[in-house]
Length: 255
Image 1 (cartoon, rainbow, N blue to C red):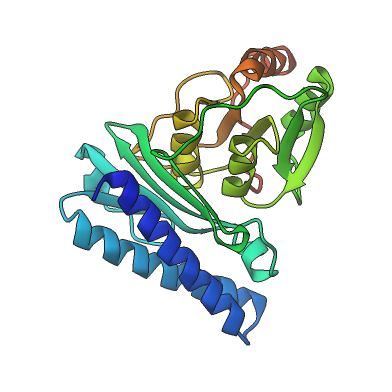
Image 2 (cartoon, rainbow, N blue to C red):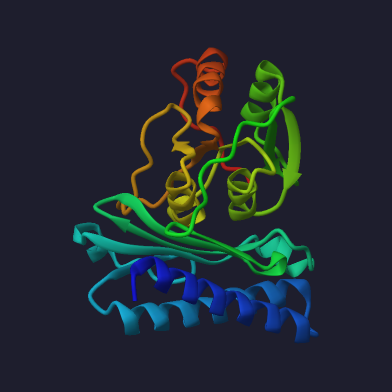
């Protein structure tokens, strides 16, 4: 089985488990999120260890084995991206299975179980034609980063509130938005799989200063991200540079 096929199979299985847990749960929203995170994480790690015993794993929900930093192949996973949306019975949550090879996000699967869709790096259609009209920028439903609002004003974009990082990134890949801009607090598991999928589909993915996304770092904090249609990369990056020249990432905010 290829790495991409494995990522898809595990993401789909974890998504089905999360759907089943949510459908039968009688606990509080807080406990539902904890249970979903815990059980999906166990499933994913068990499957990866069985199929790829020599690879390392970096997970939001597990102890970080720093020996991974010397490894060529590291699976970077988020068993439940969007715990709040999952717990509140919304649809915009995701499962991320990413594989970084020498720090590059090479393989990824992002499952949106409540929407019945899984995006995988080896199964992407050609980039569709650019839509007409104002660009759409997906941002956090609860607290859009200040820089996103300012850039949207500068380039004439409409803000589209949405839940998890994976859901926002896949909205761009699916053609439901043109830009996903985040600044203020993510980790490698929040965006490795989404970035891999987006780049495989021909989209731009980078830090907000335009530098490459690098994974399997000793500190997994990766606080800012731009995923967009390629024709919007230069205007967005130029607007960011005008608005905050020489500045670093902002304070942590919800992804």
